[in-house]
Length: 111
Image 1 (cartoon, rainbow, N blue to C red):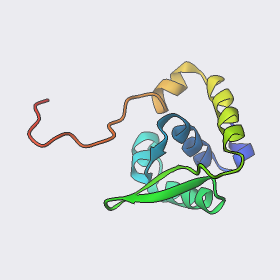
Image 2 (cartoon, rainbow, N blue to C red):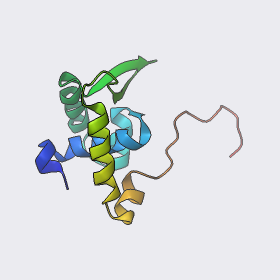
Image 3 (cartoon, rainbow, N blue to C red):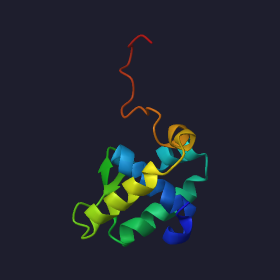
Image 4 (cartoon, rainbow, N blue to C red):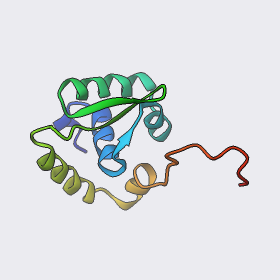
């Protein structure tokens, strides 16, 4: 929908995912969108170079989130929210709104 504005459909997916989930990592994005891991890694590096996202390590995993020091963050978030609200409900439910586990299940915990 907005890939012509962002220049890349992967960047669009990342920005909308971050809008709703606040943080992510490349493998999580690969699992959700079923696209090559390298595409997400490259797009996240491009967003980080532009100052839109920042990364930090949690264990061995590189976590990405919006850069709170980005000067246009509030405007970007408002724009993304307005665009997200115009998405069809089926599309939102398929990719962005399903509950994803943020932490692994405790060892030995019954299902």
